[in-house]
View 1 (cartoon, rainbow, N blue to C red):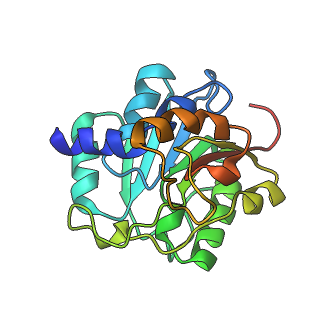
View 2: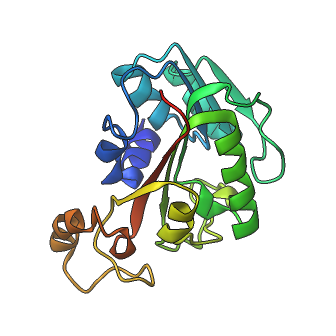
Length: 208
């Protein structure tokens, strides 16, 4: 349970924005959670969206074991998302989430995964951070950050991008403001994700 609390903390402050209707509508029925980790997103979806089918994919078995114990997912699949196509049909899901995952891949592989996300679902919800992290977490080598993706990359692909993190410089280094002010000034970056160290990108194809 301490590990789960750690994961909740790692996603703050974007978690509440992630669960807004603008990102994840109430009527969503099938969801794929890519890079599901220990299951935070799956549990939020189960609690607040009542999706009929929630599938999780991750490459780290201890996280999948934890996610399985939560009971939030209907299916869990272990696979290396950096090297293989997702084993799902085109537009098989109403929604795919990929939360704090792309930055862990080399840039070309991150873009290839983004192609796959857009293939398997009509709505894609991604969050990523530009705050570098070179060390492993929980002994998981997949946790190292390997790339940073500029908000304009998502906009060029038709995504709506909003800031969802603390105030930060373009370099992803947080400002000299004390943490309290960084967190509260972070709300100013909602419409200027360029100055946020974390942001959410949403792409919708057709209606959902």
